[in-house]
Image (cartoon, rainbow, N blue to C red; front, side, top):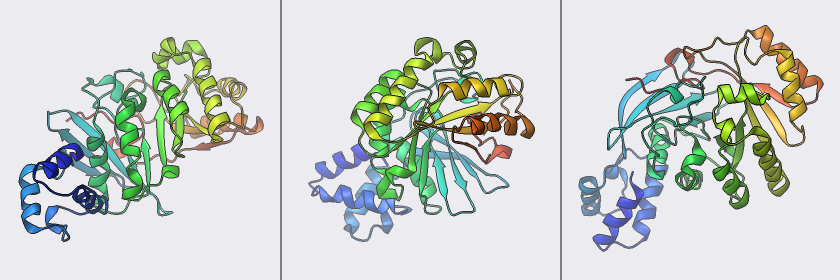
Amino acid sequence: MDLALLERTLADTGEPPFRARQVWEWAARGAGGYDEMTNLPLTLRSRLAESVPFSSLKVEDEATAADGTVKALFRTADGHPVEAVLMRYRDGRRSVCVSSQSGCPLTCTFCATGQMRFGRNLNASEILDQVLHFRRIEPVNHLVFMGMGEPFLNYEAVLAAARRLPGIGITHRRTTISTVGWMPGLTRYVDEVEEPIRLALSIHAADPRLRSELMPVNDRYPLPSVLAECRRYFELRHRKVFVEYVLLAGVNDSPEWAGQLAELLDPKVFKVNLIPYNPTGMYDGSSREAIAAFKRVLDVARIPSTVRLTRGRDIAAACGQLAATR
């Protein structure tokens, strides 16, 4: 819900400040509406139902994949599309991938979001309402800011939302913010954020020329400067940085490219997450054999690495596929 509107409405009606906390606690526990908030006076519940929409987002469509992944398409009050994903794992993890923007202005070539029209930054309530939608389905315990948008282009709202997640059941250590290397926000994050929220960096190529082809942001903020900031983060916070690397067949997936990546990364600072490419029309995904060969090079160099389990590909809910085409 629009938490700022909630607080204004409560203040205008003379309610004590703790009422806002009560409403939030109910919503964070998965309440489906004001009528369930039994420790609020009935007249107040009725007033809130009339004045403060229970969600700042309208659910426009929802799809469930064969593996249990759920993708929701939302629409903001002013008409912008937003997608978010709930991923279910056999070990009990329930991870939500949320968007921080409607669309993305950074136009990474392998990402479907980068090909759609950029709308605007989302506010903290719109980010949280993506999580609360899935919380009303079942408890959730992990979250990644890896949906639509570059989180550090919307720094204030992303951090405000992240700081409320423990109330929903998602600790800071189970929250990850992923960036392509937007330096103004990254520098603020390194300097300011003391909570143990995880940091992930999208690299996708160690070679500057290739990375600029795949990710135009590299021309503005070259990878060496971004990696230096990540090393500073490790020195200050003593937390590893997760490196995301999407494997594109014949583009960045050869053992030679793996060797360049290994030379670039300090194994004490970085851990690599290899991501099988989910087709969005421009590239082909790497074969299992190519992914295994790439990983072997990292293993020999003692660079910690894992291969991400793809979820929701059949409903275009996997990494890089969010595009709100409806």
